[in-house]
Image (cartoon, rainbow, N blue to C red; front, side, top):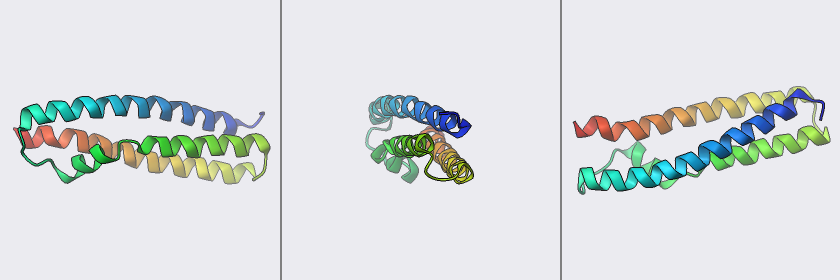
Length: 111
């Protein structure tokens, strides 16, 4: 476990567990709050999709665990794992951005 990439994948897996558990709780609270405030009005499309697939950070947890395992075993070259790590972080940043947009859009449309 001397590769630095291994520690990056472990860190990414840990952060995804924290984000996924936090997002699950936020979504439950968010649904009940929006039902009380909106009283049957339609939600924006991004919000509806997020409420349906709030589990998406667990996919990146799986990718990070797979990357950790491959890094420990030393199967692919370290450069290849770094490319996977950078790609996963970039895709996850896009997902986090759209999560923030989806969670904030209903508050903009209410006022």
